[in-house]
Image 1: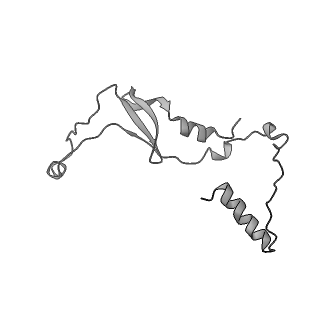
Image 2 (image 1 turned 120 degrees about the vertical axis):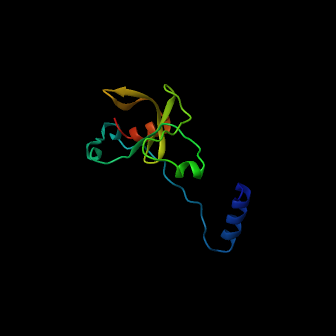
Image 3 (image 1 turned 60 degrees about the horizontal axis):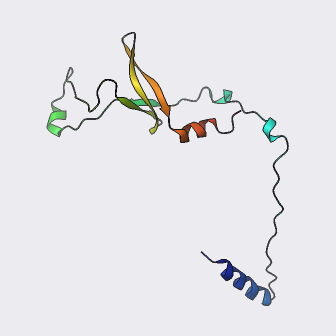
Length: 126
């Protein structure tokens, strides 16, 4: 990376050679008037499919143990009831939640959404 002095030296040498190198002056940028009156709708995104998955836990098994798995086998995970779980959106960790049971079905109650994703999803929306 060139320092300011190196740039000035380079430009002064180029100008003496008659090439006419000049510094560019850009006009000051002004905000567009009325841009805050524009609202964006996400209705065009309502039909976009997003893959959500929940990581309930992990386990380490030896190949011999995996080959021995059969219907009805139980794999002990490193999580207990009430522990937080990761919610994964399109293969990226998106949020944290907790497992709940609703009418004999499992669900996930969202506890927090990673701030960076929340900002990206709501960017430009009013």
